[in-house]
Image (cartoon, rainbow, N blue to C red; front, side):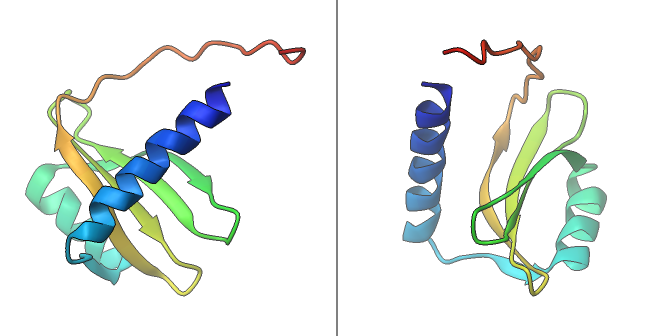
Length: 97
């Protein structure tokens, strides 16, 4: 169930981002810009089925957050950004569910 919810949320974010002009650049340049302008750093990451790297960056104060996806070639694109980031406690999932 959680995978379905996460996939649905991810698809909604990608659909919204696809409607706008993609903002992409070299990963190091994107990370440097987010660090300088918003004091954001990566706090979570995962690898997509096609080898892309998804990263969540925050300012660690609950202010701003950004989600980027980086291709295997090193090009990072903004997927979503906002304010009011809240860290959630991780809950162990029942493997039988």
